[in-house]
Length: 275
Ligand code: PAF
Image 1: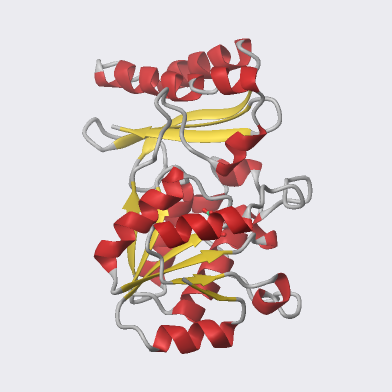
Image 2: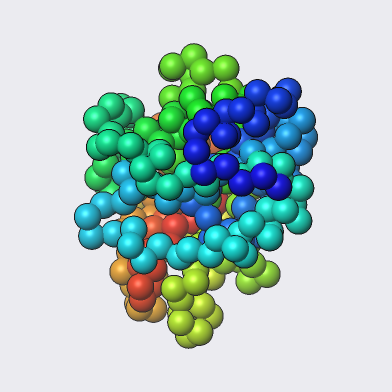
């Protein structure tokens, strides 16, 4: 695997391959990322992975400085997964001067759910992803469904800006007990790790209740959040939304998703269940 830390080096390498599948990451790779790398093989002649911890998508009180970093181990995992090129720019290569141009997703997409608790987060995500797209010029880019709202925002960005890139979604990869894999799970103590699968369980219960005909979403959401909080979580939201645009459900037959975000000890965990 070739490691590129400058835009010039990455661009020169990219010019030598045909179809490229890009997997953008912030490193601290787990099996969910590796599943994305494997799926990427079907979408390009070469896989380019990126590792860049994007300051722009972290709020002032978030964990940018302490975000888990494991570059050597990440490289070994990427090699083993058959990744041809890793783009790992430093801060100044990616943002040589303060980044003054940004992608501002529409408020109705980013003032809800994650965006309500992380103002500016999706502006930072969309800006860095568009910049990565401009540098790498991939044919396809792969993202996990755990970050459901991120996937929606990026799909819409690609569509509305007419970028010639296929966005490929990958199912959330889970531990045997249901916990969605996340780099931030590393912050969980042993006791919190044992408690953490509850988030997935309560979302499954909301799904089962709706499937059984219960459309009192507000009560189901409140009961789910209360259960988490009774077990030591600090819940930001549990919400049943339309898959298409993450707005409140309107009619009976549209595909739905139950999403949740809650803090357990140090990390804030997010998850979702489609139905
Ligand atoms: O999902 C992530 O890891 C990040 O938000 C992304 C897409 C790599 C942008 O920094």
